[in-house]
Image 1 (cartoon, rainbow, N blue to C red):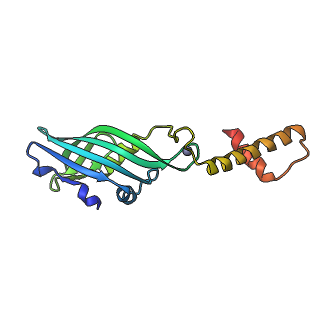
Image 2 (cartoon, rainbow, N blue to C red):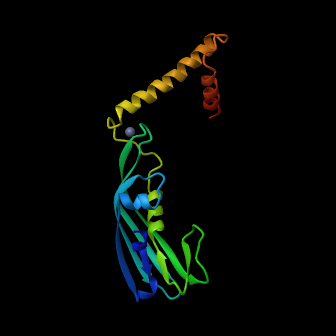
Length: 178
Ligand SMILES: [Zn+2]
């Protein structure tokens, strides 16, 4: 399926426009860690320059990611653009910057991973459900757990000798280090 994202650069005389749909199967196939699904329209505009190709990538749609607050699935709208440059060279090279070298005899570039990266980088640092839309069951469990931590903390302050489960102390150490 990801081979459908291969663009034959040599076939482009002046400019080429390519459209793709990034769906649940796409994010599964590309092994996305943080995105479990989506419905994203993607467009790649390839312009032939004198010694390279300019690829304009545009993505627009919705993806499914985990809410920061309740850790349940949430729908995140995204829209983003980026420009990459592709040159022919002796062997394939992608340093993670904006220049990609592809072997001249191949003359093709697969844009699946680049489109995934544009989508992944467009996710806001903080993403949560709209107010009141979080999973209440999940929030309850999370609240109960943080409550237990607080209670334990109070026990230690009030009565040092009354140590309870030592596992809590290990967890507390972790929390205090943060
Ligand atoms: Zn939520």
